[in-house]
Length: 46
Image (tube, rainbow, N blue to C red; front, side, top):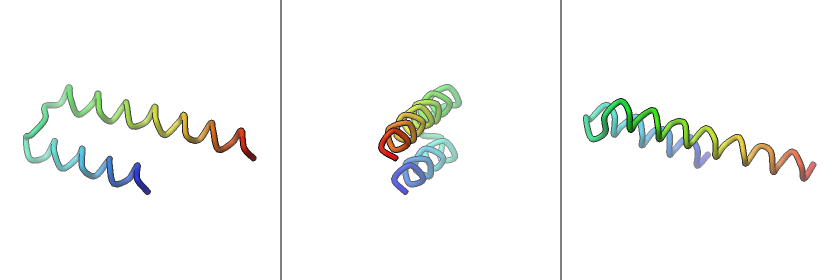
């Protein structure tokens, strides 16, 4: 669930105006890349 927590924090920052749309997109893309790498690692262990 850490990914969901991180996603919620990023959304909260965006909605509160702490980060702009470009930073929001960059952070969400980075989070998605990290999740994809983790899925790849766990699949390799199966």
